[in-house]
Image 1 (cartoon, each protein chain N blue to C red):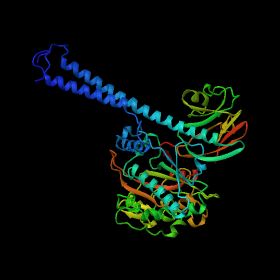
Image 2 (spheres, chains in turn yellow, cyan):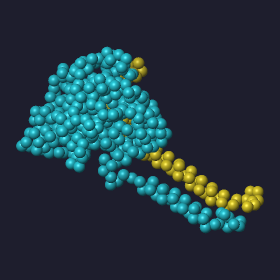
Image 3 (cartoon, rainbow over the protein chains, first blue to last red):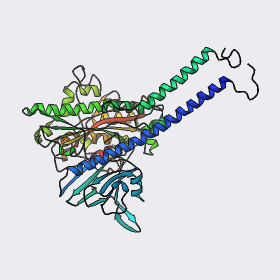
Image 4 (cartoon, chains in turn brown, green):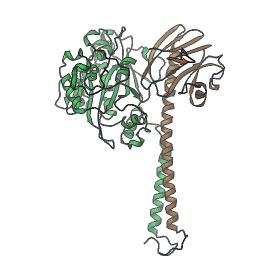
Length: 168
Length: 353
């Protein structure tokens, strides 16, 4: 079959269409795979925060419990009191606990962007993790960096306050 | 001939093209429609295990394990404190007037949980964490786990029943199902095995290094089981997999430790012996010799796991599905559900809590 230079045959056109379809399918599959991973992490994070919220709600005032739960690497548990102006908008007008992708510099921003928060009906919320060094001073972190295996939390609930600490 | 004249398309080419495009369309349709609605959590887990194990290593880490921990509460009617505030807890009522029947029921649920976990996870023959571990920068020689089930016994069940339940004996004497000829013990090992191997008591008191040249790697790391002051009533059925171990050495050590061996499968006397035999690096474990006899607390979990009573079923050998088949060891083990014990076995945990 003779072709003129630059002439595109029907065969070529169909091949190009098929190639484009193939590439689109590969891109689609890659995006889908990525989404599945991200969704899975979010689903796990949601389960973790739901479990913690469930435990808190099941507690009576002046009660203290400690329980192990499955952590998630590169995520942290944090929270804000009702009167804390730095808390993310997701918390609305209440105290809240959040599980968010790790951002120890600005947890509020990470929580607002891709964290999962649960409002807590207490005036004050205190979360204390491992000791960190800030401007030369060692203080307990206001977040709990979650490991990829089990971690034990201690929760103390009073009438106005909820305290969540790492039980080490 | 595809083109007879310029611009003329043969019916063969046309049909092929239409079929290819239709194929793409069907594939895309299924990809869009593919969700997990309507499937049980067990089906979902099985599917995700197979997906991960059969994925090319480059995408294996993107295939999440959709295995959710089963929460089972065994009681005479009360709720289990261990599951307070948690959702999807399966409550199973024990026969209240028959102590023996209650013990058998507890053993049956526990043995089934162990066996189901082993089956769903591919009996240790699927490489589930190898490439994923690499992707997430975990140490490939670290152990990765899935907590298949958490089984708790409520406070309304007397301590005596909880502590006297003997899961090992149940696994030795009971068949895995009515339609099967195999006992749990045989299913975990092979048909010829009818009894557990005897354990050398001295192994429980020896420290890791004393095994000298027979240890493989990970010096200074050994499981330290917790000594609880309160009776533990919660057992976690954990599947663990670890790669990069010398299978023959592991099996040799397991044999020395008194494991019941059948081919590449084994039932070890308990996790503390595995620590000495397989020798891996779970994070944070200190070098402490565990004396089984020195721990005297009651309870379901305590009796079955702290004292190293509950057998761990395992397989060491080549994985069958991965592109680059490598050797590794897998096991399913009942452990107390607490940070110390679980983290001693598992450097990392996957699956849904």
